Structure formats: C-alpha cells, structure tokens
Image (cartoon, rainbow, N blue to C red):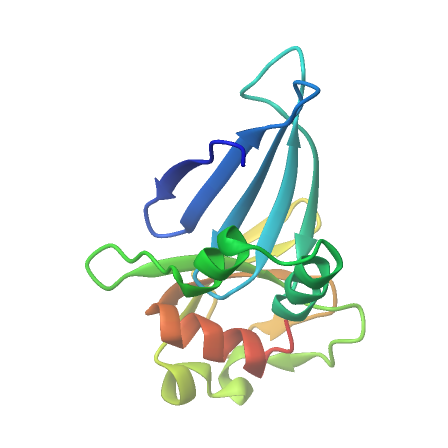
Length: 158
C-alpha cells in the first residue's frame, strides 16, 4: 500500500495525497460537509494542481465502491477536523437550483451555519444579507460546525 500523506487544512478539512507507481501524485481533499475533491498534481510542479474534480457525498461513495473501497476510504469518511468548533466550506449550487433569498432558506435557524459570501462567476459578494438571492451555479461560502455544514449542504441540495 502506498504511503499516504495527511495534511490538515484548518477550517476546511483534510488533504490526503500519495505518489503512484508511475510517479504521478494524486490527492483527495475531504471537506467538513462531506464533499470531496479528487486532485491530480502537475508532474513538473509538485505544488500545482493539474486537474481536479469536485464530488458530492454520494459521488464520493460511488467512486469508492467502483475502486473497490479500502481502509483509507473508511478513514476518510470517519475523519472530521475542526478548529475550535469552526469549519468553512465552499458549496456549489446545482444548475437546477431554484433561486431564493438567503433568508428564505432559514439556514442559520435550521443549521446554525451562516453564508458569509456568494461567488457568482468572477464576482464575489462578501457578507450577503438575508435579501440577497442564491442562484443556480453560485458557490456559497458557509461557516459553522461540521454538522451544521453537512446540514446546510443537504438544505441547499449540494
């Protein structure tokens, strides 16, 4: 089994990476919400990411099953890292997401998590208020507990 490097990403989650037999480095970032990012590093610059794929919780499980599952996959599912109870995640909204205001989601009351920014294309909307609209393909930046982020992800269908 390959040696797996584990790097805690404060407030985000954990990055795991390893070197394949052919010399290619592959990694997985597991976020507090349960989402994963599969990353392939550039061969010429080991710190640069050549390609990445965002996976929902269900897609991560499917990929794990297709790859035959493993001890590492089980550990990824069970590990959650928080910094003094604070976690942050970037949740992409689906193209089919039905537009609505932040206030209408009742996110803070239902999950304890807060949307601290909306990323829409090349534009960032920091500190949005309850009347700001969430739209399909937006990415929302959410802060809360790991449990609150997972609930917020479910609430937004991410």
